[in-house]
Each structure stands twice: as C-alpha cells, then as structure tokens.
Length: 206
Length: 232
Image (cartoon, rainbow over all chains, first blue to last red; front, side, top):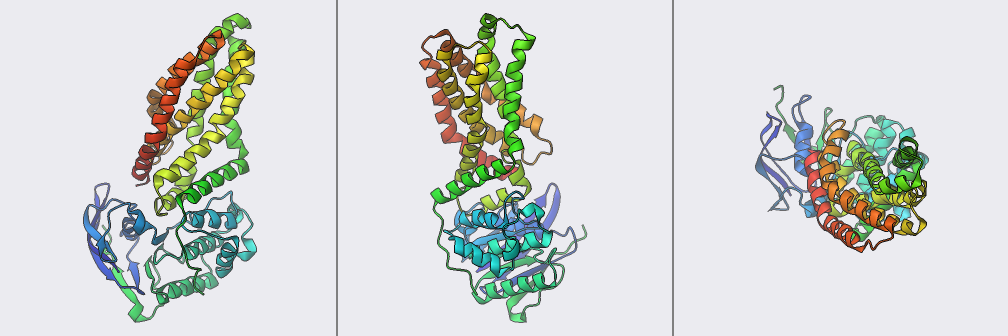
C-alpha cells in the first residue's frame, strides 16, 4: 500500500538518506532502526512531506504522491519526538482541537479516546502540569481518534512506563489488525508477529 | 476496540476550531495580550510629555504618532503569531491535517487581529483624546485603524512564516514587514489627518480598504508557502 523508491534526502550539504526503498503492505509495520543521527527522523519527516526529497518517489495506494498532497495527509497521522500539545490547554481541549480539524468529533468520542489510553484521570489538567509520559498518552489518544490508516511514529515508547509501552504495543497491534499501516522509528525492537513486521536499517555513522 | 468511524471535518469547522483555540489560549495567557496595548498607550502618551502640552500642536502630530505607535505595537505582537505553534509542533500538525494550510493560517491571522488590531483600534480614541483629537474625528480614526491593522496582521503573517526557522527572528521580522507596511502607514495617517481636520476622509479609506482586500486574497497563500519553507 505504501512504497518508497530510492529516497535521497540532504540536510544542508549532508547526504543523509542514500537511496532508501521499501514496500509495505496493509496490516504491516515498518520498523526503522539505525544509530543516532543515521536519519530515522529525517526519513519519517520525508514520508510526511515535511522535508524536501531530492530524488525518489512515494507511492500510496499505487499512486505517486506529490509533496503537500492533502488527500494523502488526511490518511496519515504523525507523532514526532515531542507530543504536539499546547501547554496552556487541558488534555481534553488539546484532543478536541487537534482531532476536530480532521473529523467531526462528539464530546463522548473524545472521552472514549482519553479512556482508551488511560488518560481519563488527568484529562482536565493543563498539559504544562503533566509529565512527559502523560503527554505522550494524550498524543496517542489524538492519534487513535483520527482513525487514519497510516501511522508514522518517531520512537513511540519514549518517556512511557511499562504499562504505557504495553498500551502502545496494543494500539499498534490493533491498527495492524484493522488493516492499517505503521511506520515506526525505534531503538528497541517492537514485539510483533514476524509476518507483520518489515525491518529497515538505515546505515549511519557518517 | 477500534476508534469510531471517521468522516472528514468541513473546512468551516476546521477554521472555527483554530480561531476558537487561539482565542482561548490568548485568554489563558493574558500577559501576552496586554503587552502590545500597553506599549501603544505608553508611546502615544509620552508625546504630550516630551513635545508640548499644547493641544493645538499635539493635534498636528497626532496622526503620525497614532499610526507609528500602532505599527510598532503590531510588529511587537507579530512575533507571537506562529512562534509557539511552530515550537510545540502544532504547525506541523496543521500541515498534515489534510485541511488547507492557507485556511488554517488565515483563521490564526483573524484571531491574531481580533486580539491585537481590534483592541488597538478600540483604544485609539482614548489616547486620541490625550493628543487633542476632536471628538467628531474619533469614529474615523477607529475605522481607519481597524482597517489598517487587518492588512498589517495579514502582511505580518507572511513575515512571521518566513522567520520561523530563525532563532530570535524579531528584528528580521520587523525589517521584512516594515517596507510592506509603509502604504498602510501613509494612507492611514492621511485618513486620520483628514478626519481630525473635519474634512472628507473617504479617499484614503478606500485605498486602505483596497489594501485590505489585496491582503485578504493574497497574503494567506503567501503565508502558507512561507510556513512550509520555514518549517523545514
């Protein structure tokens, strides 16, 4: 469903990605690994169209995707290093505004999302008073509620406790079982059935 | 448990949510809201102290004073337009929302105007009185400032987008925006001057309105392109 052909990306004059290619079928997870600075984040951001791709093409459902294609963006959810939340709003408000941009959203649906990630207890506190792990859970609630087929996750387990990591693993499994796709940059391997996992190692150290 | 089935949010809903969110955020951090207004009041009220307490002479410089103060305090406020959203990743999520970035940034700019330009225009008659402006000129001054600040916010959004990637971009932002703001300053001050003299100020007001229309149609597109570049 998602295919990348020969991606070349420069950051400044550094040639970060040198010909990355992969194919990802529905219900599969691409696990991206590599040393620090190898270009994992750059690859994820290039998939989203947040970084200019020098050469190469991206295919989604068999069609080539231009950068800033809003139909493609409507089908993907990106969660980077830091949870994209407003510190002065509560978790509930953050979810409402972030997800409401994408889909019609009832208050009860927001509650379901927050409870799914175990954030019900602290959903009405301003995000600035929450721990990094709690913020991450709220960001996952927003991602889950978007209901998009493609998730792009940058180190999804950062800052999460053991329960939180289990929760994320569960969310990823559900997403795959529903026929969705996940692209995740990780340091620790994800625990997934072999048939569902595609590995991509970005050579680094330059 | 799968997430509830999703439809697409309409562009009107998306725009309204962005506007509502920005207004709510501004009232949670009211310090940022008051700053440009206090700056505007301080500049204008320093003139009677520094120049002369004679109302007849103050009245002559009032248009220039009001507009330069309005321009400077708008520039001060512009820095906050996209900075926080760029910092916490909200702008990236805007780009990836599947909605038109132009529309979302336009909604942000409208919110910004409602929080800076509009209060400035409302405050202008008050400080105008301190500068010896006759009462019958006050509605004209309010209208000219309200119209002029719309264009200032729109033009400023382009500059704010372009300076996203720059640390401490405040000075650069001012340098980028000032040349584009000159026509607004010229026509706005002229309209104010005519209003104070009791003359017909429709001419410069039409020109201000024309600039606002030009800004409304083109600036959001340019701002969206600028933000895409600035986010890289």
